Image 1 (tube, rainbow, N blue to C red):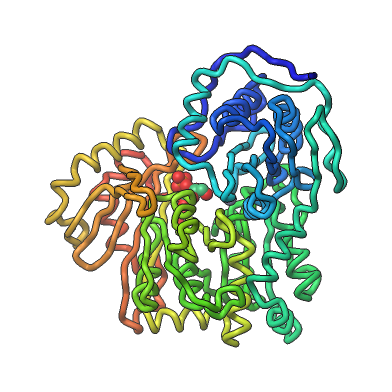
Image 2 (cartoon, rainbow, N blue to C red):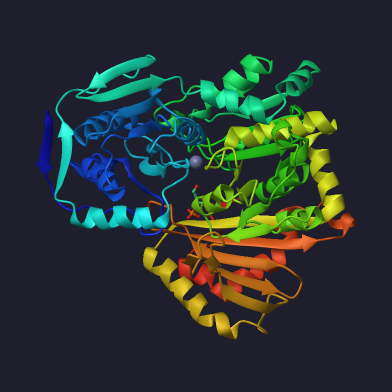
Length: 543
Ligand code: G1P
Ligand code: ZN
């Protein structure tokens, strides 16, 4: 036995309630930090002896080093097999799929999602369980508790095998199987959307620009869109994953994917634009001069999903996170299927998907997915959009406008105040929560509050309750403002303010969202004292 037990001391682990650990890369590189966290995970999930574990990440700086450590620790902890993406690469949805198809015990997913990478950027690590989804709260609680008490980790001294080519090697008794990260994922997509129909769409001259943002989706998008579906070479841009994502934030929002937004607003726009994030679970879809808000995207996908090959049987239900707009609710009502409103974060969808209660889920933060995996899936959403475009013979923008004609338009925006003073962020939320009972009847910026609460969720599958998930304020014109602090930021606090208003009047469907939402934006600022408490004149990011 070559395992070495290394004495160590407790670390600052993950925040309770979050499904993984995200920190500055420098923190993960502190001596013993990664090792302690990995051992806390292994202990928190009840050990890995004899288990098969999937390992892969988004290729950011430190990905390969961290995977080497994880493999050496899996060996020392008696795991039977590690299934690793070639080059250490696996998109988050592909990892979820691999865990499920291989019936693995779980998987280590290395990513800080849309956060920047590099020596000065962010790194992250989470554990997904056998259903392919992020570990549920009892397990993350156990992992967190272990980070507080950990006193030793186990590691073998042998070097981890290279991950550059597909095949199986042995590491001190651990079988290390290096797999093609793309193949299984392509096969799954082929079952869900009609490749023939989308190939015909491209053959007819349809033009797409897919911005992979130098993150993990590049090889997946090239393999499917260009190699299998016949989209012209160059359809996928920034297709090569880079350890620092080319210096950008791999976040497909209007700030960090600005070139794509500019192109789609220009006279030279292709028929459709799309992008995904660092680890490939987020997506954005843009029509000509019409970025599709993620909330609308969820609603449109839900309303048309039966047209996609793998969903011809229809939907069991729709799930959305609470801050996501209510556009999906209108679709669920029309289809006569249940609508589930969950707290922010994908893990709440997992139970609904496992129980067969929902088929499609989505979040306003550019996440959409279905029961095919237990993570959101960026490229899947783009492919389903393409399948719907091909089936309906309408442009992206026309499909969206047709949707608004039928259901009305839910104007939507999210305002983020990033890296604000943590105490100021906490104080704002405390004051807002204390004010909840006094808000109904209060006027602000010409609107009157009708209801206010702090969102609580009871999981219909297991009865577990999650409290304090965000303050919701309803106004007399049907508008809504939601306030919560980010659980994924790595610097100070990030205040998210989610704003929406429903517009049934067709004649007012052409407005700029910031304009249509101006009254509720002003009311939200007044009620929460945002400018005053954060010292910021306006949000840092508007999506
Ligand atoms: C953010 C998004 C949330 C998403 C999460 C993980 O969390 O808002 O919808 O599930 O990233 O991708 P937050 O920073 O708001 O806690
Ligand atoms: Zn992501």
